[in-house]
Amino acid sequence: MPSIDLNCDMGESFGAYTIGRDEEILDLITSANIACGFHAGDPTVMRKTVRMAAEKGVGIGAHPGLPDLMGFGRRNMQISPQEAYDMTVYQIGALAAFAKAEGSTVRHVKPHGALYNMAAKDTGLAEAIAEAVYDVSPDLILFGLAGSELVKAGEKAGLKTASEVFADRTYQQDGALTPRREPNALIKDRETAAKQVIRMIKEGMVTSVQGEDVSVRADTICIHGDGRQALHFAAFIRQSLEQEGIEIEKISHLS
Image (cartoon, rainbow, N blue to C red):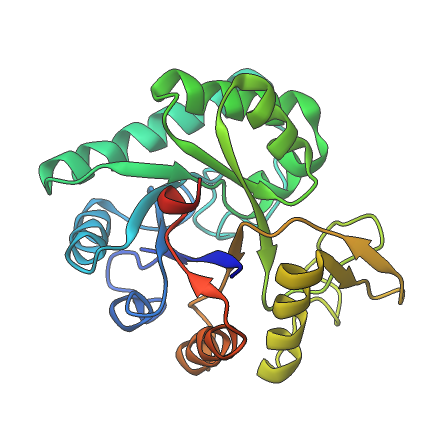
């Protein structure tokens, strides 16, 4: 029976602004990527999200991003590998402190947004991030886009890695995600998304927007929790996987 981890980016509210339906989404996923204050989140949101995840038995992960609250960490920045290393260590450390205070621990790390996409193609940034994760704890699992430089760098550093695929994003023929600025970047139909995910898990293939099949490895599926229909979308994806006989387990159990 195939198995898969379901992850979601969480803790992205900030101050008086609430983003996402974290408490409800946590009932549907197995791994939570919690914002660490650079692209979103704040200390109070971090604490509350860590606590909710721990109470629901969901794996806690750090979600380090670029220091860009205004752009939600989705705008590319010119940073050096050393800056990427320092940002990653800093943010993992912040979340790890909250996890420890709540009697839990950080299990994985998944870079956010532009940092994630930059590290998918830039070997220097990827290796810096992987080194940062390893130096904090070699027991952490590094999430990266399937087939990316980040996954390769994690393996090279001696980390456990999780190849990530996306339920609601389209793919290019080189395996990259379609940039969000393009009109066909997001999959809004939940049945289309479910079919794509099931094929990636069972066949290791995804159809690119160019119409060609691309080979992918699927260890964990990202489900975004900040859209208008995010909760219903996530529930449908999970139900579809279960109906296909796909077991859903947190990444620490699968690795």
